[in-house]
Length: 255
Image 1 (cartoon, rainbow, N blue to C red):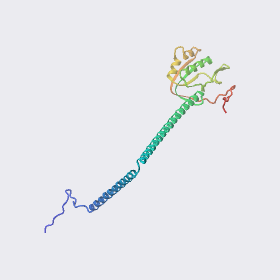
Image 2 (cartoon, rainbow, N blue to C red):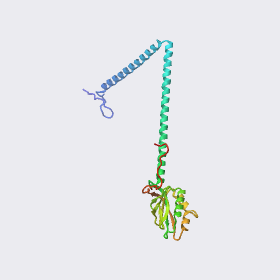
Image 3 (tube, rainbow, N blue to C red):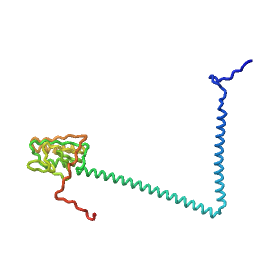
Image 4 (tube, rainbow, N blue to C red):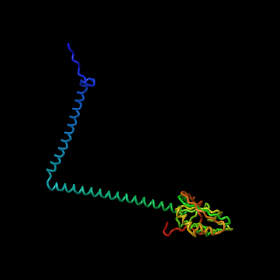
């Protein structure tokens, strides 16, 4: 008796259908049926709701329909107006916050500028160091005053003379043939450090018949040299200078 061999796939595997294929086909068919049922239910529900609304509207008089339409239009206009007002309010708040932030930044910059001018904080940045040799002590206060004034005119933001931070009320004086900076003795060589535009200040000091030439002509052995720095720090003033004759005054109308 001849036996017929079961067919095989070209790759040698068994080509007979897997036993779980009918079960998978049944599950897939069931899922499709359930989905179609849910879709049909939703369509019927929506159609009935539309029919109910249409039937309700059909039962209304034209005057009532006009009133309903007018009420809906008025409600729509009110909501649109409220939305516009809220958007305008939000825009006003955003602009106010932006203006407040800008004002705050301006105040912070002004406070920083005033703090530097008052010498209560350190100043750093590019600048120059002017070293003045005066072995015989021939320089007078006006020489240093002119030098400091020239630096300020050239853009110096902070100036230090032999470790003394200069402020608006600073002064150069002489006592017992000694040069004083705000009452502190200054011994040659004088080191004047200035934070500001280094190139501009260096050019201002070196112009013909300018500060450097004037210092060189002030006496024998007086030599001034300028050193530009990419980074320079001028320390803050040690403590605030007390006022001898001045007293604070309360503004008129202030509590």
